[in-house]
Image (cartoon, rainbow, N blue to C red; front, side, top):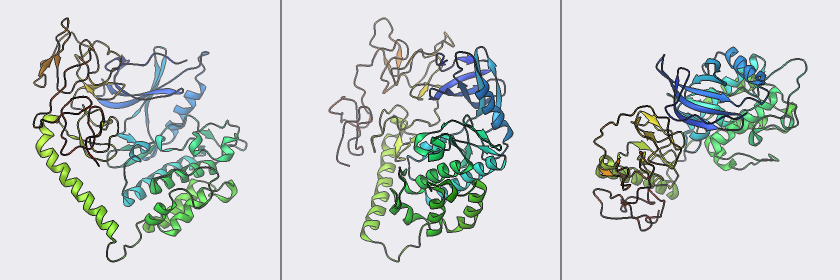
Length: 436
């Protein structure tokens, strides 16, 4: 049964909630601080059934605990805290699904693919069928270390195997969808993950070659590597690798060849234009940072285009994506569980989104040199920082149009200050500023 979501700064046992990472019908996942061991952790809190049946939850913990490998996510602790079952795990930077939103160099993609295969091969070696291989379940840690997580659907292979068609539909093998998962089912799912890693496209039924994104794949890897993926993504399980160990052995032989094809001497005009465009964008970002980094605090990179963005921005001014700094390390001590932007410990509400209130942690108000204005609510008159959308004390919407120091231009839609000579979109309302 699903329980109320935990709020930022709320304590559960020895853990203090920092932000919510994900929510589903299966479980809620939070970033938290272990207040005793002083380390950041990920807390997975599964939704217990009405009858309190926790057998599947215990199974997940026991499977993950058995598998000790550099590319498998470790369970640090698991226990009941009140009426919740809490699983504490290592906290990564982002999922592979998040990383796939941005361009990945071929050499880095080869390294990530190798780690993904190593993790699954180790699980198969210990007779564990994962049953839910997908980019969301691979977590990236500093140094591009990849770790496989979420063994909630995992099955132990015995002489006979009875299982449901659990898994994620986009990556599920046909036989697993009919309730008969095999080692080859994981191979199929991982083949789709690696295909997307190199091609940028996720193939769909009926998986007839050439698949979507095949031209991109062909331009990045050798034909032998494509043959390996074709063997993984076969509809007939008997024509795939029997398990991830066989796939691992083939990949080891092909790894040195998984690189860009040799460049033809002399660049085509289109390639030269792309290179010039990229260099121009970098110069543009550098000049923008020189003028506006201090006033906007654009210390982060957009999670899609990697342009300079601020945590307060609602949209990327370069590519227009929502919440471009999501997942970045905030300079503030806590973060909002809804939008993941930084918040101060004495705030009652998130100043950036209309999210729920926070658990009161202190009655003291801390001074901050970033406060430059006051709330328009006569009963509040709380301090405001530039580009806040809501008062963090009373949640009143900020009606004043914020100016951008160093620029006289304003957005024609929201009237907030913009850097029109640089931006493609308004960072506050996503109104187009100029042609891209």
